[in-house]
Length: 208
Image 1 (cartoon, one colour):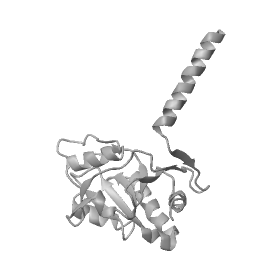
Image 2: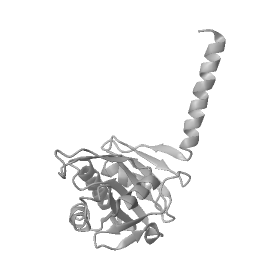
Image 3: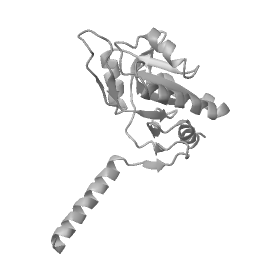
Image 4: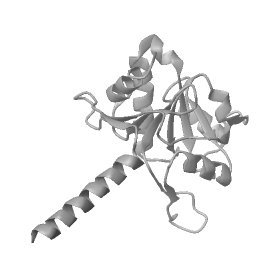
């Protein structure tokens, strides 16, 4: 490879790095503890994640993002029929709040379903209380969920049931935990599998 080709390759590589940096401006790596190999990603308010949403809680009440203003909100998107990932992440969220002690009272844990057809308000209410007594379950119409998922950059796709009309399908979805600040903007983005220790540490890093 001659010098010109090397220079062109180097410039192209640098441009790709700069573009990636621009897309994730304000994001830095936050290392979790050794018991939380997934680590976490901490983002500043410049990250374009979150936004207006209107959903329904387990009591049938309509809830908007404005209802959480002035409070830290820890959010996870998933579904109650999830066989492993969702319960693992929700358990870690609940454990993290316990690890925070009194500071954990400042955090509102929220589970948003991406499977409204099966996750009725009653189903959600019974499900979330198993992970933390203060956890709030939210669902809504297909359009409600689609708008919330778009605001949080969440991917999800319903799988095929074993037979027409059966409700035994799985749902593919991204697995991130979001800590939204009192201003409604993203404070911390945690990778799936970060673990309770890393979640607690990430929350501590932004609490006043």
